[in-house]
Image (cartoon, rainbow, N blue to C red):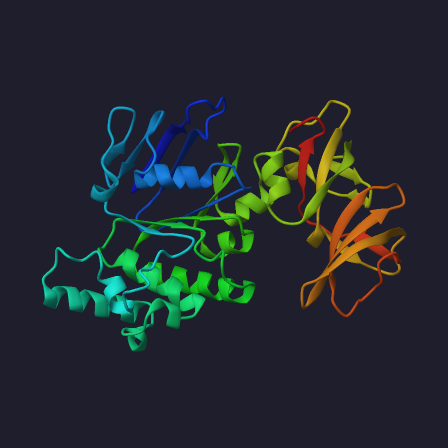
Length: 357
């Protein structure tokens, strides 16, 4: 592993619960990891601990084979060769773009510094903006300047703390893809903090879902979505709700009885987590598992709808009171309060024991 975080703990005086509680994960050279979770879950504290800005209460961090943090070892942040991009970019307003980028290159002579700044300008596509000042740039351009400044000293690791949070949704998505391309081109290992799932999916080779200081799962996006290890991860990733269900053996295979009908051949899905002897369980019904079908026998009332361009995200209530969600093509523009037919269409579902939290 290039960066290896092992059993890491960060505690603050006077607080009972650890801000970061026995977290372990790793990244290989050139990989990009993303930490995601609700506000206050410890993801930024974890990032700061890797940067050397928070002392450890337990565990260890090694980078490129060197121990940089433990209870007895603390390599100063300025000696870690770690670059950081902050939420507010922290650009110097009185310096133009090229001087902002070159700020951390005082160890180079003038010729080397100018060459490195030019390389960074070219890498982030801002060659024509070298003499402009931060206030003359768009939010996206400022973000790229901050990235170039962080990469200029040739860090071993880049840390990014919600760098797109001040940008509009469309720009965030575009810059996320641009950022990944830039980091891959620079062959930089990176750790990124965000609260946005789409950013996490667009950026991360590996994604960590955090809750109350703990790392619930460290995995790729596919596994997080289709094979969540905990109920929290299952609920947090994607759009969906849990519904009471029952698993029964029928011939050679397991059948899952759900509020929207039966699902056949669910042996592998049901086997992922322990289920009670009577078959009681809960199934995660995701929005993309439910199809609008006027001829379906199951009807549901539209409680809310959110327009997403090509589709609506409908929140629906069954006659039983169970709430579900569904993605519906946007040309099916039904009114709130209207009843529509829905059916379950899923080759794979997430199933947990009824008492599993």
